[in-house]
Image (cartoon, rainbow, N blue to C red; front, side, top):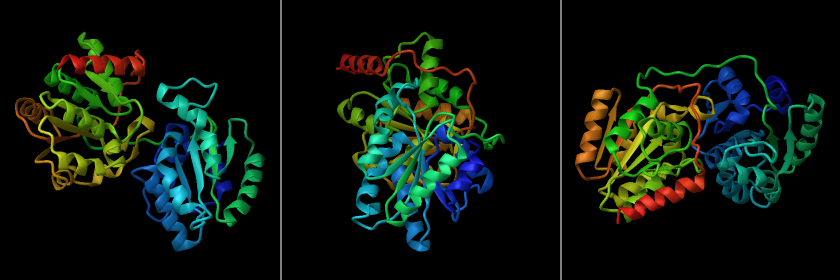
Length: 374
């Protein structure tokens, strides 16, 4: 279905969400039509954040907002849906548009399989009526579903459109870019050279895929790396948990700006613990690149100042490889919690592969390696 038809049938005036490749057509349409416009379209830090934004919009206008997201974010909406939106509490209606990764019968990555199995049931369990949009869903069918949904929304309940792969299309191409020069894969290559055999926890998306291929190209073992293939936003917390329990070993976290923003409170927790053996690297391209390149708020904030305010004793930002190598060497040689923000371009190799080991194999190899350090 053409995205303009989909949007017209929904008839909403305000959209907020977290981008997803399954609903890339919607994300691109909103960016092409509105950009980031607080009155019509906002990209949130996480799915709970956008649900609360939507609630505020409804309270101020009386209109029904749209919240879009990948189904992996359903966990983040459970609290505001159950304790804020629900018709037994404030009866705030929201239209959810959810990209269905891991839908049964369609091959997908391991982190999406179980989430895909429970996607529809989770919405039903939260008393949110779903309608599944497929490639062959006709506009008349969608219109009929929306007519049904209007009565539900008027009663203060929420509804959901579950979007299958390739269900929404957009002919116009939208290009995302920034003015940064450093390429992420080369950045990670430099990090791997300095870290040696130190354990690394890497974030969701292309960063972990690039680290995996760099190890292959270098003839190195994958045992040093925990690839956080799912659970976006929690990479630094995983690294913190390891650093606390392996205090005699340097632990490196390769984070992304979208991941850091998603659960930014982790900065304060890390700063309060202040482990002397943790290096938190934030590769900041100001974009949700893995799912299409839509912008994050990180392009407009001072990450270094935020880290220092949260208790990081050392935090720096670099935008060239000479400065990066100097900071990596300092982090390797000295103790103390530190954050290194790296300003990065948007883009990756078209032939970038995926890890050839399973998530369970990654965990087992990594845990065995950590055990060998004792």
